[in-house]
Length: 444
Image (cartoon, rainbow, N blue to C red; front, side):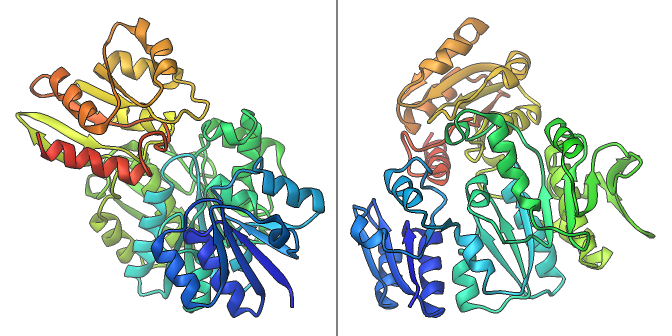
């Protein structure tokens, strides 16, 4: 019996373990941290052997193949030991893809992944398709392949998930943008991160679709030096010779072959330029799948925004509070700041991933009244922003940050939580960070 070892017992790892057991493998799950109660119960109910708080090499190095959860870096000692033994290491997505014939609509990019994934899923669900939601949102793909029988999956893929994929193929690949992110995981080399993102189109043929932002400078440069086999569906604000989705006379237009779809920008449920891109990509994916125009139109009009992404929280004494906790990189914060219509008090900080803050420097100069640095170590933020002439406060908790921001704001201002950083120095996750922000605002 082939032995599968799963590293990590979170959503991804537990799903992979259950699928592996269903496929008849000898399964062992190992997590160096404590396993959450819900996953512990799932593993025990399935009779799967597991451990927590350690990685026992005697059990792990006997594997024929290892499924590694995306949060575990390649530099982890157990991963290095596996590589030295020549034991194959794959992602949960790669493993799950072996056991389903469903169409895969896969979404990646530095920003906008979750919104676009949820929007495509919303359109396909509204069209009556038998569709699952997986990857970084929803249940793990492996768990759904084990327990469900969907015809389509919409899958949000991070660079970490893409790194562990070799044979998996996206029938429709969506690449929204590429800006520096997670460089601490890529030896601080931007090209390594770019190569990771472009894995989303590996194994594609001309029967498969590649949807991408035509004017992203990084994507444009990469396309010029790569051989692409997919059928291309570029989108941009301005219409080019090959552009399939664009804006013309305040209308979002999608043009594929002889089919033309259009709707007023003012009717889109999601405002802002970045969300226009997300809507274009989603509309293109649905159009490639021959979803009816009216379904696409009504779905783009009726979609509810994603939590923790430019989420309005409350207005307190004419100071507006916006939760953008999902902005875990500088480019995502750039989009948030660019959408601000009032003077802004910006809360940023956390676990730095090799950030370059020059990207938001001009917007901070133009739009930001004051800055609140929220993190265990704000040295890098001070080094960059102290000389910019803004009022600055430091905070070591969300309550302290919200009170400081409220104190610095004037009537009519917006307090924006858009951290540019990962959350793990003070919070469990970006969701925990955003939830604490909302709770603290409501206590003002």
